[in-house]
Image 1 (spheres, rainbow, N blue to C red):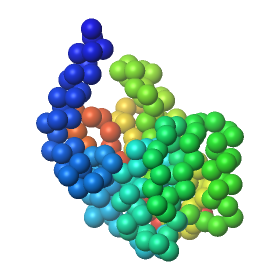
Image 2 (cartoon, rainbow, N blue to C red; image 1 turned 90 degrees about the horizontal axis):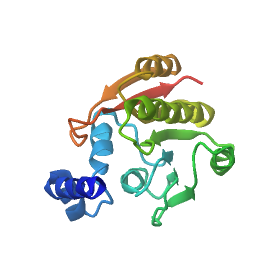
Image 3 (spheres, rainbow, N blue to C red; image 1 turned 30 degrees about the vertical axis):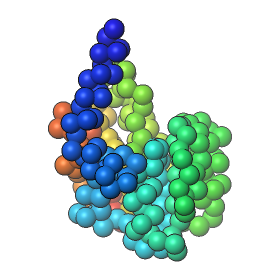
Length: 206
């Protein structure tokens, strides 16, 4: 019964959410589009012709937005544990980013060329227990930062979803040692009660 009640509350919240309604009206795959859109407006991390890797991409709203910015001369490589419906101009890999084989497949897909932007909207399956969820989310963020360090060109950018809690400050400090500019963003589309915050890092030091 509790599970059903939770599902009902989620549906009710979605129905009331202005960002959900707006995304549906404008043809975006999820409300998450407006988080990336605000980051782009403030930080200009995406540009035409870039190569972008999108981690935790499903259902694909960030890919939709990125393809419009980078254009036909750009390249988008996306990865998610969940299935994602095809998008023109997006190369998709389905698998667990924590799996070494999938990680290596992604590196192989990127190839010898350097990437301009790494986006990570990854989050673990939440249990509701912070002592479990927080370490899992920070581990995914650390893997994403490690990946960015392997593939970003000098001057490249990195965006990662974080959750405030244990390990957060240390992660921000580590990012600041690798990028010349690091900012924390709480987009308007990020629900106020949610502990998520986005780290936006620019000008990667190779």
